Length: 280
Image 1: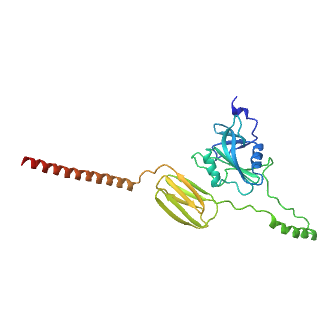
Image 2: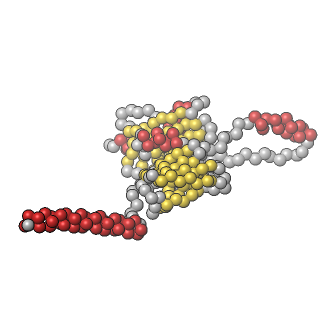
Image 3: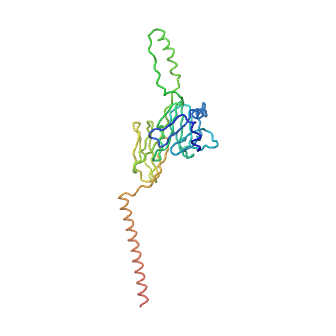
């Protein structure tokens, strides 16, 4: 019996949105284990399980016999479900197949798509950590108005300012490339300079708060992008030469050939003079 079959009864949930090439199976116990890893502080760690084809079964946050290191996790006390630059670095360093982010009582998985890119701004599908159905916004029942209801409302009003609010999501960059055109997008409004370093070329683009993306035609296979304090990098194949570059290469080859012919002509003339002197 394979390791995958022996762990068949463990997972109780499955994460398989249409955008994901992978199916992730996990249990509520694993989610609690990840959540408890942080407690009252943010925590990070490794996910262990087994993989069979395009299905990954997550089992624990601690390694044991029969389990492989298949992913990483980040457990945050509050905020939104997304991959920070540090999360992405841990994902790349561990050569992980999946990343799990839990924030408060919401979680989401992150995987590479068919082209090898990873969506960092949001998970393809978020889920609740509880076993019950997704929570719905609470509505206040409108009762018969009385002076007691008004008095209770006035007493509760100051408490609204004490309720903690979720901080805005951190700035994150995403790069998508199509036939040499790189689309640079970000998740929150920002007014700053977008810095693009394309090989030896450096470009600065002012960004207004109502912008959320820029399309750039890359010239090399190594692209570095910075917006505010966020930095990211794109590494891709070299682009084929354009028609102008082909013409320049042809001209350079002809100039080299012409210089070689001139050098051969000078050498031939010198040799001819030397022979004539010998005959005299």
